[in-house]
Each structure stands twice: as C-alpha cells, then as structure tokens.
Amino acid sequence: MGAQAEEYQTLHMDEVLSSEAEKSTTLTDEEAQPNLEEVEKIIGYSFTNKVLLKEAFTHSSFLSTERSASSYERLEYVGDAVLNLLFSREQYNLYPDLPPGRLTRLRAANVDTEKLARVAIKHGLHRYLRHKKPFLEEQIREFTRAISHYPLHSNGLIDAPKNLADIVESTIGAVFMDCNSIDTVWEAFKDLLEPIINPGTIKTHPVTQLYEICQKNNLKLRFVNLWEESHTVEVFINNEIVGRGTYSLKKEVAQNRAAKDALDNIWKVLGEEKENAQDQEANCHSGELPEMKNLNV
Image (cartoon, rainbow, N blue to C red):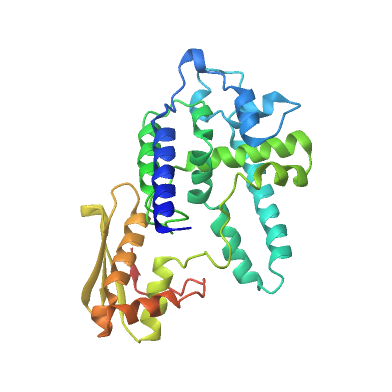
C-alpha cells in the first residue's frame, strides 16, 4: 500500500470514528428499547432469547427507569470468562512455540479495557447502551478522538471508558448463554475483534520499557507523585527530571504518560544519539514488569 493510500485510509478511519462518536449515546424514552435487529446484524447472530441481548445493553443506572430489567453485569462476568478462554485456545493453537508468560501477555493485550472499548466504537455498539450516566457521552467522544492517534493500542496513554468494554463482554456472554457454544461465539466475534494483536504487533508497556532500560544501564529511576496537587507524575533518572505526564481523571494514565515522555528523552541521560536510544527502547520485549522499588506513585 502506497503512502497516499495509507494517508487516505487513516483519514477515512478518522471520519468513521468521528461519525460514530457524534451519535448520541443517551437514549430518550422513545428510544429506550435498543433495536435488537440492528445489533444482531452487527454481530452476525440471531438470538433465540431476545431478553439476553436486551440485558446485555442495560447499564445499572438505567434500572430506576425500568424496574423489571436486569443490568449487564452478570453477562459481563460470563463474557469475560468466555473471551479469555477463546483467546487462550486460539493462541495455544496459533503459537505452539510461545511460552505461557508471553501467551498470557498477548491474551491480556487483546482483552483489556482499551482494546474492547475500541471494538465497541468501531462497530457502533455504544449507540445501543441504555444508561443514565451524564458524562459518558463526552467520555466516548474524547476516547474516539484519542484513539485516532494510536491505530492499534496506546499502551495506557489514553483513558478508555470501561462501559464500552463492558458491553462487548456482556454481548459475548449473552451469545454464549443463548447458544451454549464457544465455537459459535468465536464465529460471531472473531472478525469484530480485529485487528487482533499478535506477537509481531504487541508493544511493551512504557513503564516496563523504562525500568528495563534503566536496569540494563544501571540508572537510578524514581517516579514522583504530584497527582493530588497538579494531576502530574514526574520521572527522575539519576536525580535529573526526564519526563512528566499529566491527566486529571486517572493517576495511572498520568504515570504512563510520564514514562513515555521519559523514554522520548532518555537518550539525553544515556549520552547517546537519539536513534541509538530508540533502538534500545525497541529491543525491550520481556513483557514482565520489574519490581518497582522506586515507584512513589
């Protein structure tokens, strides 16, 4: 694919994501029943028990409006277990030479909150969620704008609304409870879950990368927690500030952004050319988070 085609594809995807985000996520009384036929077309599965699908898209905040309904939480619980089993089986067969530790990390990358929230946005599933959460719509818009900068995964640099991931898991749980077949669930969702992260596309978490580089080069790493005062986390290496991250809603995101900022600047501390430091960063793929003795956040 040429550069011009890639640019068009990226712009087209941004337009699609922006269009999905602009659609309201708050249902009026007239729209209180999700269009089950539309959802069934999206997932490619027709329910025998339509109540399961209705439940899969009902947030607990909506229950005061419809007292006879149940929230999606129990189906989410089922879907979480089914999804982990499906990826465990699929990866076991696809990658016979990968050890359990790397398989676990690969599975986690494909079922975490951000990855599943992306699925919900990509296929417009959020439009069918029945809820009474006043800020969810804006959170979805912000998330949709943010993921346009990270085509596959941000590795903790953006904040994904958990409700989006929840409805993907609850829908998986609903399909499983309706058909009682994990093979049928996989057939329904394997394409929806694309792009699936594989050993060639998985990235190491920025905090992990930073610890690995500092350990390899015998550097003293320290995170300073200023989140309560300024929603900021700072990174010091050998008592020199090299990174700073800010995010007002979640300290973990601020910490991850600080680590990424430090990775972008660590070549100054190493006394190497920027390209060499970036090569060293790219070679960090252990996937295990070292013990964080100096992490003061």
